[in-house]
Amino acid sequence: MVDTEASHESEDNSDVGVRLKLVRKIYGISQRELARRAGVTNAAISFIEQGRVSPSIGSLEKILGSVPMSLADFFSLQFVEPGQVFFRAREMPDIGNGRVRCQLLGGHRAGRSMSILRKVFPVGQDSASSLSIVDGEVGGIVVAGELEVTVGTDSALLKVGDGYYFSGRRPHRFCNRGQSDCIVVSATTPLSPPLMQPSPRAEA
Image (tube, rainbow, N blue to C red; front, side, top):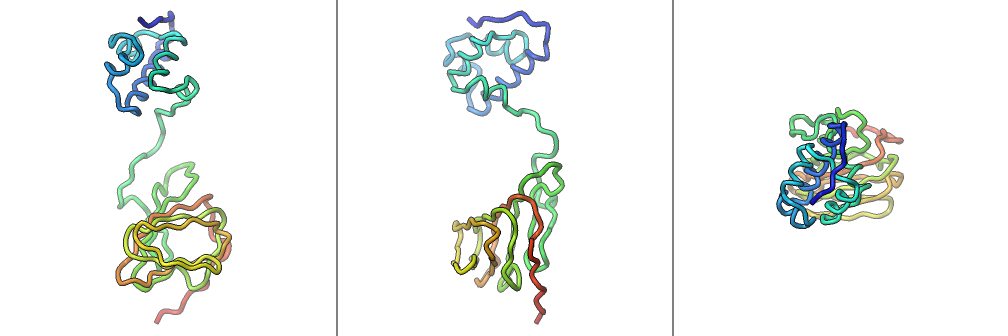
């Protein structure tokens, strides 16, 4: 049996209920399974999730301990997030430089603190005519084709599944010398423009 505390704050009860339901979804378990693990009735879990009862701290700790999850983690869960969560390909703006197609995930999302990019390097194309320097860190994984990556004096030909991760302060360049388009999923942080813009390359 779950001890309950009288509460006139139904919103507080509801908040605990919503959080408990989210915990079950995170761990992929049913009300019945959570009740079995915690040694309480299925009805007790159901009433908490509906906001009909407010469990005591001890009872809640016992329920969470069967998952397991601490009270601190439970009450810090962010179960409501403003703004768009899912983005279709057509909703990702192309911020490429004309050489490389570069789609930005969540480009219009307020408060965005990182850049996740899908880059397409056409056959024979490179990212710039000279080595680039940017703030922060640069990382990526090749998901199609091949990509030659030069970082400082180091160079490697990366194939599907290979990746790179380095400080953007190291001069770098990417080039597709393969026979098909190369696709890379990459990330950069923090958000900042290049410190040194490459000079345009004359078109053949």
